[in-house]
Amino acid sequence: AASAPTVQLPKRRLGKTGLEVSVMGFGASPLGGSFGHVDEAAAIAAVHAAFAAGVNFFDTSPYYGATRSETLLGKALQGLPRDQVVLATKVGRYGLNVEDFDFSAARVTASVRESLGRLQVEYLDLVYCHDVEFGDLDQVVNEALPALAALKAEGLVRHVGISGLPLGAFRYVLDKAPPGAVEVVLSYCHLCLNDTSLAGLLPYLEAKGVGVVAASALSMGMLTKAGPPEWHPAPPALRAAAVEAAALAESRGQRIEALGLRFAFRQPGVATTLVGMTTPEMVAQNVEAVAAALGLAAPADDKDKAEEAAADAAVTELEALFVARGVKDVTWPSGRPLP
Ligand code: NAD
Picture (cartoon, rainbow, N blue to C red):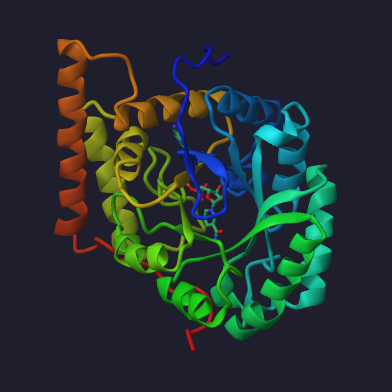
């Protein structure tokens, strides 16, 4: 069993939503089983351990595990006070291929009602259009966002966002949508050890008054000792560099997961970073790594200082490795070509 948390992670304002979200958010996509088998009791314990450590932000989607993530997260949240949880889910994505996306007003409206049922809640704090680049971006603007605005007026949805991989898709939607229609952007795999390309878009997002959620601090499991899952879309050279990075971390007596979080949580300009977790042990390790990255731990003695310096040196080495292999900021195609 995980020991009781010794630190409380702080919260930050998410754009202009008025929401206060923990610096680390709980990514529930692995609860759907996409990263391997999930033990239900362990997953529920992970959610509760995260909440006990100050994590109040939980992220899911009907797409994750074909609704399994929402159902399991809903079960876990039954044990927590609803008004102290910021719950985010998504609409529009229901499978892998372009035909599994539907950003029509009717589907978006039905999807939110279905999610409310699976999550066993009366309202959702935040609903994103999920991976907008697979849809018709004009339909996202002209149908999905107005449908979500109507659900807001009904009190079923509190705030609205968009998520996706190509940064250009955010610009397209934000430039066309009326002010306030998109309050939050969720960007993934672009603010981690091997890819910091989100940094270049932050001034634009700030000017638009949009809150920023960074996801996949470990690049969807690529920056882990277990390595990327089979389906991970990274090109071979990037995968190979990540495998090398894990070995390098180990040779320095470090855990690559801790180094990845150390790097990601020191990047400025985002309100919160989502990490996918399935066990209380992972939660405890990651809370500790984030606390160390943010300097929240107890005053350091000489041994702690030496350990901190060793971790910093290892992070620098890993950053240099991705640059040396020519894969820094290398990404992969996602969705339709941007208009
Ligand atoms: P991630 O980078 O957070 O990595 C998750 C993987 O790392 C899981 O396999 C997990 O088991 C493993 N892991 C985490 N901590 C570990 C530890 N201490 N030791 C060993 N392994 C560890 O990737 P993610 O889960 O894809 O991203 C986080 C969340 O962000 C998702 O769960 C999802 O909620 C959200 N997200 C959204 C989108 C989108 O909207 N398009 C895309 C990606 C992620």
